[in-house]
Amino acid sequence: MDPTARHDGSAYREGPAEGTPPGEPAPRGDPARAPADPAAGTGGPLAALIARASELGGGAAPVHKWNPEHCGPIPMRIAADGTWFYNGTPILRDRLVRLFASILRREADGEFVLVTPIEKVGIEVEDAPFQAVELVVEGEGEDAGLTVRTNMGDVVTVGREHPLRVRLDPRNDGFIPYVRVRGALDARFTRPAAMELAELATARDDGSLVVWSGGITFPLGDRH
Image (cartoon, rainbow, N blue to C red):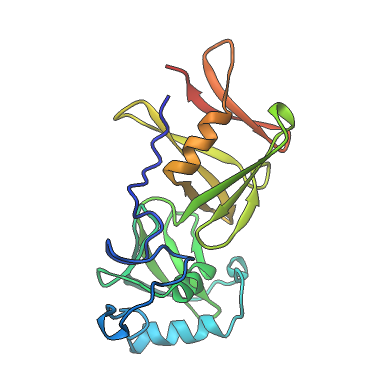
């Protein structure tokens, strides 16, 4: 069975086709030729949100503790390949992307919001907000442990607190894996990471495919 976590070569990119993967150093060149960063250069409410988020320090913020007034949506979107956009233009600064990711929360009704202690704004997320870009395996079989690194720098081990799930792709009977990162936020496996996961799968007598991590069995689907 072919896993189909889509990865067309742009899954790590912060910008257009000639852009640089998020989390990777930008290529050297003429700064004057670099496209403007729409989020970094804006003023008004978004600039104020960036300033307040910066004051919270590094790492994921305790967004689960905050319940400020909802200020409505802003024109920000996370594409299925993990690229962040503002007003339809890719956000090019990895520092800004990680800053926004640190204050991201998913509400009980499924809405994705950026949250600070004094405000909350809605954004669009096409699929999962993060990308699982690297998979490390320790042990074998039922004793295996699967550790995942995301494009935002999170490192989680698949298990009870960070469960693995799959979404079947009806186009080709493949599967798209996801892992819970924090709160209700998931990371979608890139195609290379999904291929690695598929290689670890064990077929059961009923034809189902499973992997183990942290002593827990996670189903991947049926063998075809």
